[in-house]
Amino acid sequence: MNRMKRKSLSIFLVILLIISITALPVFAATAQEKKDKLEEQLQDVKDEKKQVANQKSKIMEEIGELSSKISEYEAQITSLNKEINELKGSIAQKEEQITKLQKEFEEKEEALKVRLVAMYEAGQTTYMDVLLSSDSFTNFISNFYMMSELAEADKAVMNSIEEKKKQIDETKKELEKEKTKVASSKAQVEAKNKELNEAKSAKQSKVNSLSAEEKKLQSKIEEYEAAIKKADEEIKKALQQSSGYQGSFSGTLSWPLSTSSANYNLITSGYGRRDQPTSGASTNHKALDIGVSYQSVYAPADGYVVTASPVSGYGNFIMIKHSNSLYTCFGHLSSYNVSAGQTVKRGQKIAVSGNTGISTGPHLHFEVRTNGSSYSRVNPLNYISNDVYNSLRFW
Image (tube, rainbow, N blue to C red; front, side, top):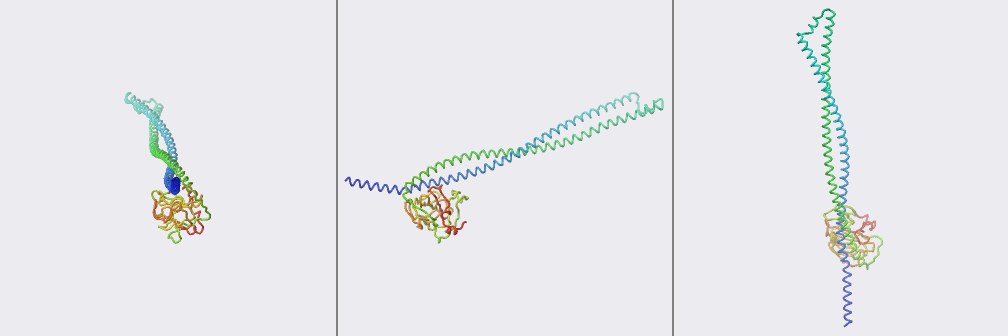
């Protein structure tokens, strides 16, 4: 009876061990799915932050240009204010001169009136009366000369005052015109300066808003990086637990498609940065997209199937371990011909390409990794032969 119990317990432990071992690739796939989704989101946030930083940098440059122009306008305003103040001083000086001449003219005019009134009150004395009252020819000539000189002097003084007043008045009018012109220029410069200051203020508000957005995005980046680190640890643990297959690899990878497949050599999206082909797709494309439609996919080298299951974004996904430093991955598959935990040979059919996951149409997503982590993705073109490379067509 004890022997039977021990045998039953042994069988149970073996079954449990088998279940645990076969479950490890599934666990790795689940962790990989979560990690890959987080990495896609992280890259999107990083791209968004970069765009915000570029936009902020551009606006800061515009603010710098506006500040320079504002300084120029402020210098102009200072210069125009100085000119206006000088013109005001000149106008005030001319007004003072006009007032003085006006007073002098009025005084002279008043003196002439007084003299004429005195002559009138003396008995309507005229120049002729003065002349006829002369008691000798010499006195007559003297009186005549005196009266002529007096009349000419009065006339010259009055004309001179009037002329000066007229000249000064014209100068004042010119100064007033110049003052109006300068004031108009100042008003235009002030209006432009106000417009520039408002534009600068608006741009500064935008910069402040972008700075706040940068902080929020940075916070998201840190959250994603922490989550990715945790997922990476889960993947690493799962891969370590399923590392019974060591494998070895040398030479080059075979092309994962048959030359008889239509468009087997058409690269529709290469390795590196690209525009987002569809919502949710990666803009940091660390793989090759091959333009085949529902064609057989073959193992590019001997290996161990780490996972064969749906993964977010990738759709139906296969990861094959060829050695501790080389893994290949295939995405958007329509069906599987292998399962997790299985070993495969170079050229063995592993799947059929398709259009699952985030995809714009049927194609094969082909990746090469150096340690299983998506951070280790490298360019597959570095692992194929020259003959295969020379046969490829790049869209």
